[in-house]
Picture 1 (cartoon, rainbow, N blue to C red):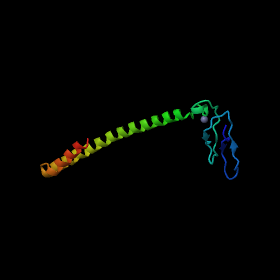
Picture 2 (tube, rainbow, N blue to C red):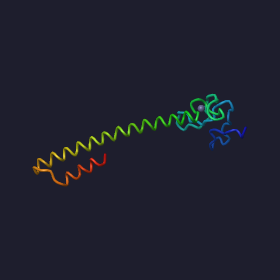
Picture 3 (cartoon, rainbow, N blue to C red):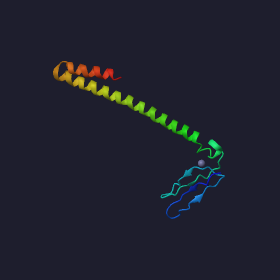
Picture 4 (tube, rainbow, N blue to C red):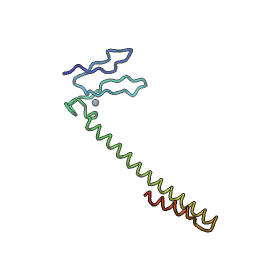
Length: 120
Ligand SMILES: [Zn+2]
């Protein structure tokens, strides 16, 4: 085995804690404020070379990140739909105002609507 990993070394404890070869190699932070990194407390046996616990298995972590990314993308797409609706609402509102004010629709306005259609 390579040199044992060191966890939670800092100015007050430059030696830190040596790796426990039965545990997952992931370095984790406690929830407390000013927490010092320590080795994950779970048993290893997952991931490449079985160095990780189930939760920190890089493949699992990757899948988790991908799932979060997908959720974000979906949310973003949903938000954009809302934006399009808001844009449309504004266009209709502007159109109504213009018709009320001038009794007609300007070429300029028609052009801006066409532009909006093309952006979809
Ligand atoms: Zn772990």
